[in-house]
Image (tube, one colour):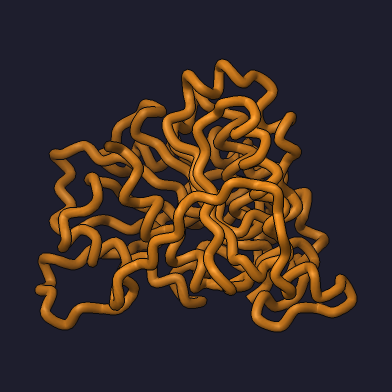
Length: 290
C-alpha cells in the first residue's frame, strides 16, 4: 500500500529515506489540539444494522476533459438515499500507491465508518466520492513516483470534470458550503493544496498524514484574511511516530501565528497507516456541513 511520493509501503518504511521519514517520535514547536480516542468499534460492521440502515457504494464513470478519457470513482450513498433530497459532498482522496479503490479495499472501511455515524445520528446528509487522484490516461497504481505530476494536475480533472459530473448524476448541492475535500498522505497534500487554493469550490478541508506534496504554508494561505473569512474548517491529523508530521505542523504553526483557525491532532505513537486515516475520516465527517 504505497501512500507517499516514492516512499514504498507505509507499513514497511524504505530505509533509503531514513527511518525519520516514518519512524521515530519527534518534537515539534507547535500547539497540538487534544487527541480524543475514537470509540471502540467505530470502524467495525454492526451486525444489528438492517439493510435499510446501510449505505451503498457504486462505481461511477465520467468523461474527463483535462485527461481526455473516461475515468472512474467510487461513490458512497448514505442509508435511504433519496434523489428527491439534496446532499452535501465529501471528496475523499487516496495516497500515491492507491486508486479509487484504496479507501474501500486497503483497510479504510469508509462505508462502515459512515454507516455507523449515520446510525448514531452524528453526521449531516452527504455522499462520499472516492476518485482516482492520478490525472493520467494510465491511472493505474503502477505509476509510482512517475505519476507525481498526474497527482499535481488532478485539480483540473476534479474541478473541471468530476464535480460537474457528480452534480449531474446525483442529487447534491452545488455550492461550496456543501462541498468538502480530505485525503490521506498524497491525497492529504492534494486536499490542502486544492481545497485552500480553491475556497470558492470547497469550504471544508482536511489532511490526514499529508505528504511532501503539500504546499508551503505561505503558498497555501497567501491571503490570511481571505482564508479566515472563506474557509469553514481546516482540520488535520498525523501519527506522532510519522516522520511526515512536519508537513502538517508547519501549516498549523503558520495558522496559529496568523490567527487562522486550524486543528492538528497528534495521534499518539502511530505511524503512517489506516489507524490514523480512519480516525481522520471519523472525526472530519462529523464536523462538516453543520
